[in-house]
Image 1 (cartoon, rainbow, N blue to C red):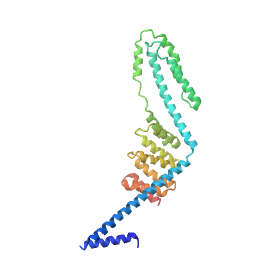
Image 2 (cartoon, one colour; image 1 turned 60 degrees about the vertical axis):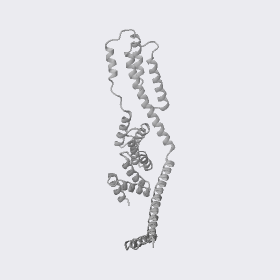
Image 3 (cartoon, one colour; image 1 turned 90 degrees about the horizontal axis):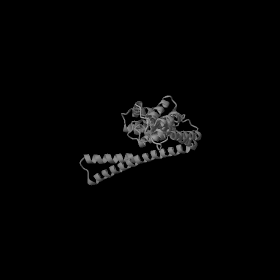
Image 4 (tube, rainbow, N blue to C red; image 1 turned 90 degrees about the vertical axis):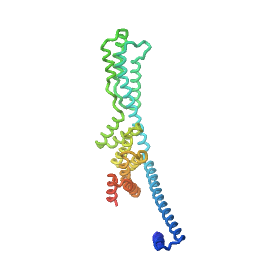
Length: 304
């Protein structure tokens, strides 16, 4: 007879004694002690299961980290740095164009004022150095050429009264269209690549977004889509890690339940069925009526 059966019989006899009205103080203490031991054993069982799940996740993370190529990681970091430089140069170019317009409208500048030609030349030199070092195209030096063509005329006219048409130029500068949101543009580019099934390209864009805009409202979504790109590329180990980042860092994200669901599926893909089943069952227990839980039930049924 098993220990569980013995405890059941003891409890049944104790209850029968109580119902018969013949319970003694010793009977009550025996019943209370048995109930306490049962609760303790249940707690130890749950704790042991949680420790096994945590150990499985740690082992998986170590395996993935060992299999990651340092060369690929270095290339990814270099690519991110180049894209960051490219965006900074685009912003600098836009500022330079605006300065050119304003400089041409000024007639009260002194000989000690800023020399726009030198500024444009410095920007062009920076571009040339970056293009030479990293082999990337940052665009032509149209701002510098514009400054070279317009600066002499501005210097020649600086002693003349300000014409009425200059006011139009000033107003034009004030009425310029607002700058494009860099974060939204990058996220849109990532979405477009994903919809075109260019998953590696999309993963790089989403990763860049998550790295450069850590407090943006869409950061959790970007991390989730990094996992989705990896999943579609059958890089299931990295998909698990991306989903785990959403689960740990963004528990209130709209992508939280989806991340739990897809992480469980990814565990199955890499042969970690036990861990995958535990993750999906936890999703079902906590959110039984959620669409993700329904999908998890179907997945477990199909993968018995």
